[in-house]
Length: 110
Ligand code: AMP
Ligand code: ZN
Image 1 (cartoon, protein in one colour):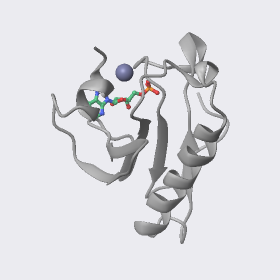
Image 2 (cartoon, rainbow, N blue to C red):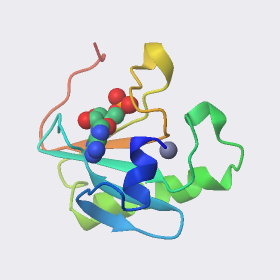
Image 3 (cartoon, rainbow, N blue to C red):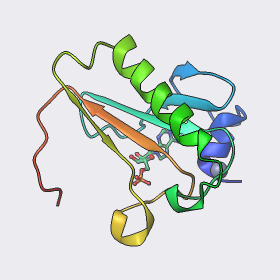
Image 4 (cartoon, rainbow, N blue to C red):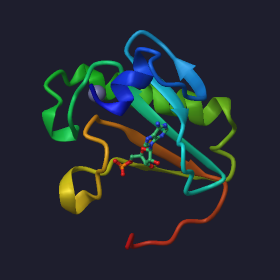
């Protein structure tokens, strides 16, 4: 079972900031910004490419924006990132959206 499935089923702890029927959002264990939250579907889906139910995307984004608003991240801005596959820099093979905030981010990414 992958590390995010273990967080979803409570086998390993996480600092959960939001949860509903389909997704859970928790603090990244090695934050890359003052606020670094991961939004994860409860269902094990390996990457963005594997999503078959397009309703998941609206659910996913709605959840991310609820977290953004709940934590007032929209005032100064934030960045949403989905790393996919080897070149995308994905290290955990379970779809997740990064919410990054609390500092300025450069562009383009490295
Ligand atoms: P990515 O590199 O896009 O696959 O992102 C994976 C993220 O998961 C990284 O930012 C890790 O710091 C984070 N991560 C790995 N294990 C855990 C964990 N047990 N709890 C919270 N975040 C984790
Ligand atoms: Zn998983």
